Amino acid sequence: MSRESLPDVGIEALAAHIPRYYLDLGTLARANGVDPAKYQVGLGCRRMAVPAPDEDPVVLAAGATARLFDAYRIDPANIGLLVVGTESGVDGAKPIAAYVHRMAGLPATCRAFDVQHACYGSTAALTIAADWVAGGRSAGRKALVVAADIARYDVGSPGEPTQGAGAVALLVGPEPRVLRLERHPEAVHAEEVMDFWRPHYRDSALVDGHYSLECYLHAAESCWRRYREGTRAGFPDFDFLLFHSPFPKMARKAHRRLFDAAMRDGDVPAEADPAADFERRVLPSLWANAEIGNAYTASLYLSLAGLLEHRAVRCAGARIGLFSYGSGSCAEFLAARVGDDEAAWRGRTGLHELLDARRELTHRTYLRFRKEQADLAHGGSLRPPLPHRGLAFCGTRDDRRVYRDAESTAAPVASDVGGDSPAAAAVAPRRTRRVRNGGQPAPAPPRRPC
Ligand code: COA
Image (cartoon, rainbow, N blue to C red; front, side, top):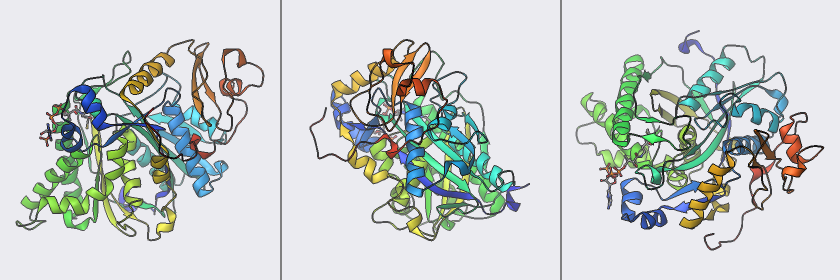
């Protein structure tokens, strides 16, 4: 079935999840002996989300799913497909989707798998889910797409200020009250390039930074040209343009590349001001990215959440373009329309609540968290999570990952594993439980950095 003949399909519900802590980019710049303006103005980053050692990609993915189910009162029994887009896989064989399937209480009849192509994985997952719904295989059930990642580079490397982490869960179905995907010819660009990669033996990514930006821009223009040739739609047809955002300045560069192409094509008048156009069409979607940093597969959908939850900009009924880029590389441009009723998303994505509840880290604790998280990835590392309520990664025992369930405050330790302890329940997936509140602590008054 061609894209043009697909019935209505798109995003019915959207919710986010982010780590409980952040590092201010000014703090990082001072620690690295760099002018803070380079990170804050040059890259456009304000803060970056830093996962605590007990917040792994599974915890982020399950947290976003829990928030989605709670905020929209979704019955897990009605989900028939779960696709997780991620490049932060925790195992060479077992997908993150398998853990989320149990933690979210999805039925045994629900397929579950991960897709990987760097930051493009979530968009690949979304198109798979949309085609599953539109193709009639869903039999009235909905698809769940989750984008979840932790962006990590070496300490002191140029990529370090563009770290971050987060997850977004999307319910995909035939009643797209949040975002209806438009039917149009595929606008894809795929090409093998060595711009960003993470060998299996590393827990932080390697990036040929400036080359990766060129690859991204080339792919963006290529996708845009395919979209334009296939539809005859032009730049002014979009109220908002959302770009994959490894750092907010990248979206500005991508907008400029497409703006210049549109000017050459006569889509925008020669006297049009690219800066003003950027502020109107792109900037409203970037505020959350500046707070969270790069979340790889989740970044584009955090931009979408940011636009939907913008306190001053209204986007109900707006036509938007979304550009997704995954290094390596595969990229795609999608056109879509936001639903008319903002009650379908406003205040339901969790974005403001999550950001308000975060705690600031000192540079020293940020470094400690990195080390502890790396240690936890090794065999035999089981230990109690930090004192907080909710879902937590507790390390490994017998080469199996151990999670404390969301409703528990008990800290599973090695001796607890076995019998009926929460850790045993996580190791032996016999019971299904709903994760509640996204594992998020209640909002706290401002505190000193910890
Ligand atoms: N005040 C204000 N701006 C400053 C500044 C200062 N004191 N010092 C530098 N800048 C600006 C630079 O002019 C540049 O802006 P521009 O690109 O608009 O010219 C920006 O800050 C970055 O400076 P640059 O010297 O290019 O930084 P860098 O070489 O250390 O690294 C990246 C920048 C983006 C290459 C690096 O952060 C990186 O590799 N990030 C990851 C990229 C990625 O995720 N790729 C995956 C695919 S998208």
